[in-house]
Length: 397
Image (cartoon, rainbow, N blue to C red):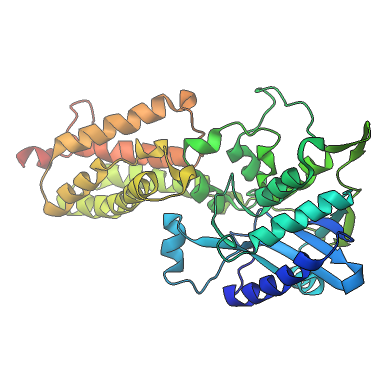
């Protein structure tokens, strides 16, 4: 999904609004599906509508995935879920040049639409181009560059658009599983996304909802039919490859994967915990570890309570990355032994790990060594009698 300057797109939008408002429905409409990019915002691909009006020599691509990188406090606004996305347009040639430069494939499919459908689609796009409608609040699963195209097509065709029977619940895939197909080869990206996406990501996606992904939109719309005079015709024609690039297979490197790195770190922490028994050494170990855990706990608090991104809410990772970790960190920094808070943190992390298989949220395997690490160090400072590595000097505090 490409970011552009809002002013440039607004100028294009106003000009094309004038064209569309006067044009009779002699046009061809195409769905453009674009391959994944290397940036995190483009790894899932992109969708756009291409409208060709031969009589006016017009060939315009409409794109609902536009945002402005120059927005003040861009990263903060995006994190809060308050960044405006918008509808933009560009010439077909300009659109292809961008994807050619990025070595990303583009597939085109023509819609089998009648004049009345195209006329209705024109009206809907014109309405989207109005200043009060051109911007919208982005929702990764339910309102994005792909789902907006699906919604327009449904409104333009109406009841004549025929959906296939829904899959059984057992056959359905979750939103997290669907996006995971595009995160293969990017283990650290997947780790971060799995950490941030809460239990809404584990909801089963219906046939219609799967179209939130560009490839899902292409496959979904390709399976639809239009009812015409008692006959069924395909909504889309067969795919036409416009730009063809071989996508290199993405292989995860074992020794740089989060699971390997955190497992190795866990081993190092266990060894150091056995060798270092003094106050200064243990303080250094825990300051480093609990600084990271505290940062992650703050991230969980923010994502659960202070963002408009609904997919980040109800994130059960807040059970093991809980706010009590911050108190534990304060205890370490102050040199005091508030063992009760280490015990609470230990029990919460242990309970999470014990019941992880029945939780309504899928957990990344790389979380496990981190949780064990947290359990290991909190158990040492919790002064549990059963722990052979408990620090004797803490009993004096």
